[in-house]
Length: 148
Image (cartoon, rainbow, N blue to C red; front, top):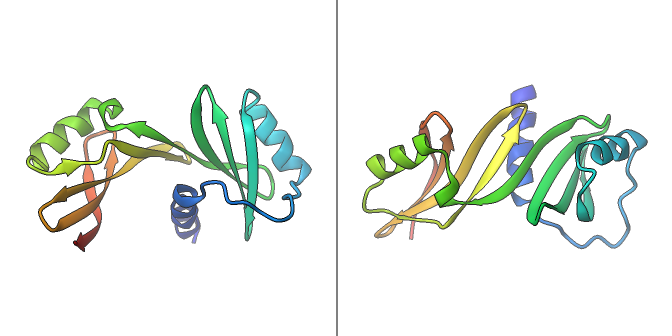
């Protein structure tokens, strides 16, 4: 069950780019304190609440970042966009070997959940679009395939 929640949170976190809410989100004191401790230099913070999770979108060191917290203030995951050029070397080598001839997105989403980091991005070849998930050790898996 915990893996399902983490996976769901990861997917939601990928797409939780600041939406405009009509009412401000009321944070629990634990969430507010944890965020201020974790990201004291954050700027332009906006919050969303989805079921049991709080999502913060903000700028940190000139980068757009998203973070997810549970009700008790535990940091569940963080994400940011990175250039494909900044992927770990193992991923770059595996990508060049396994997907030679594919057009690769210029950016990837770096996602860290419970200490594990992976990257999500798309590659395209002809009428085939693949959404890939890559780990720092160079392992790359296909999350979805779309015929375009």
